[in-house]
Structure formats: C-alpha cells, structure tokens
Length: 310
Ligand code: MTE
Image 1 (cartoon, rainbow, N blue to C red):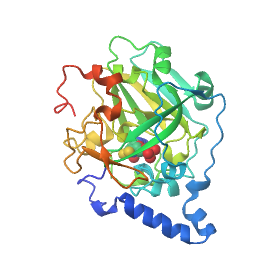
Image 2: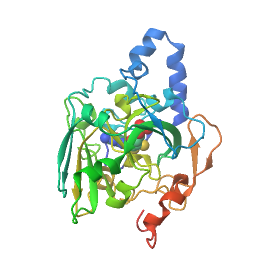
Image 3: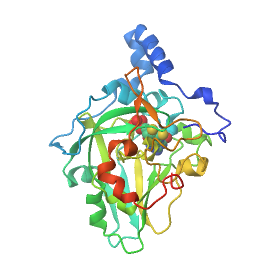
Image 4: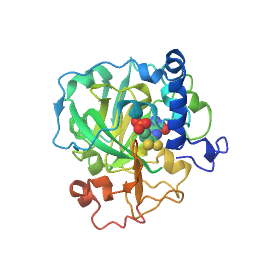
C-alpha cells in the first residue's frame, strides 16, 4: 500500500510474498523457541466461538491456511512489513473495548464488545479477499451482517455514508508514532453498501476470535472491495451526510478512491488489477469484476462511471 509521502519508508520495505515465504522458511529452520519468539502470532490468545451458523454467502473455494491468514498482514499501526502485525500486535489490549455507534441516528449506542458478540447470530462467511497489491486469500470469517447493527440505531434521513474509525493509541500501536498515515485509520461506505447483506463485521476467523493482527476485536469485511476497506479494531461507527475521508484517500487521493471496488479494468498507478496471486499458488489467476460478487452488488453502481468513481 505504500505511498510516496511516506519517505520514512521505501518501496523496498513492503515484503513481496516470495521474500516473505523465504524469510518464513528461514525462521522455520531455526529452533522452535526462536520461531515462537519471533512470530508470537502463531500462538496468539484467541478463544473458540460457539453457536456459529453457516451462511449461503460462502464460497466453496479452498481456504488459505490459517498460518498465512495470520502472519501475512497489513496493519500499519503495527508496522509496514507483512510480518510486523503478527510480531507487534500481541500486546494490544482488546478488553475492555467499546464501539460507539453515533452520528445521524435516532438511537445512538455504545456497545461493549462482549455484549456485541452475544447480540447477533454469528455466521461463518467464507469470502475471497483481494488486496490492491495483487494478492488474494480465501478466509473463513466469523461475523454478522452490519445491517443488523445499523437497523437497531435507526439512521435518520441525513445519514448517507458510514465512517469507521480504528483505535488511536500510540502507546499501544507503535506505527502510530510515525506519520506513514494520518491517524487514526478511517474508512467509509455509502449507506446502501453498508446495509448490503454481504457486508459484515467480523469478530473471528477459522472459528476462533480474531487474532490481534487481523483486527481484534472487531473489523469490517466488504468482500467486493479491496482489502484496505476493511478497517480493523473499530472503536467508532458514525453516520454522516458527507462522504467521509478515508485513511488511504487522504494519504494518496490519486491512488485510492472512495469506492475501491475490485475492478480488473481500472489499474492502480503502480499495480495492475487484471490478475492476482492467490496466496499459496504459483500461477496468477484473473481478477473478477467486484471480486466475483457482481451478481449481488453490481446494481449498487448502476449508472456510475467506475473509472471516475474508482
Ligand atoms: N485497518 C487498519 N486499522 N490499519 C491498516 O493498516 N490495512 C488494510 C485493512 N485494514 C489496515 C486496516 C489493508 S491494506 C488490508 S489489505 C487489510 O486490512 C488486510 O487484512 P488482513 O491483514 O486481515 O488480511
């Protein structure tokens, strides 16, 4: 995701997948003790979620191994290298944790995370995740439709967009002590996108609560959009009239649009979006329009020029 403004970082600091694999193999070759010390994400403190129901929205494609899902991450609050979040996020305190649902709504509410975990039936949604950098995964998320939570707060007529804000706590999040992004990380959706049944708040993956590096205790997942739309470790959901600014949009507006729908026809200035490498596979595959979810979501964008609204 790296951007020019971040002269703190050089392009070479993003770990391409091949180099990441080599580094991981090298670590594996070391002692088990050294590996667990360097990659504490492998033994992270997650707990099993119960009462999970399956979802008709899941793909039957092969799932990306848990280890890759939890050690190849983007979470700039914990560093810009793919392996940084698993190494640096283990100390993040996710209890107590509240999420404020506020703004243009009739019934604002501050949710305690444990109450939220019990409030809505938790489904398993096996979704494709496609990163703008050109890699993709298939991840079994545990979560619930964001629409369930939105209906409870009753948005008013002036609520046209939804803004998501991640925790801002430089003491716990070393990456926030550098200006690689404008903190806190924010993201946004149009209200109809947020209400779409495919849009979920994820509270777990692979049947366990979310590891910190994947956005514990709660994150957004929007499967037809690039991975960066999925704000992690959310503390605020705000309903607003104007299109909210997003962290990546503020950092590099010509590279990251508000919509950020997966679109093989609209390239990012530095990465083609036509093909992608599924993590764990050698050959690249074609990227599908809307990440393969077009049948469900194309109608949201009828009449819009998706080259302009990228
Ligand atoms: N959320 C926060 N708060 N900070 C981040 O740096 N990175 C985004 C997104 N959510 C990011 C974030 C990007 S670029 C991607 S691709 C996905 O998280 C990665 O999610 P994963 O690490 O669970 O695969």
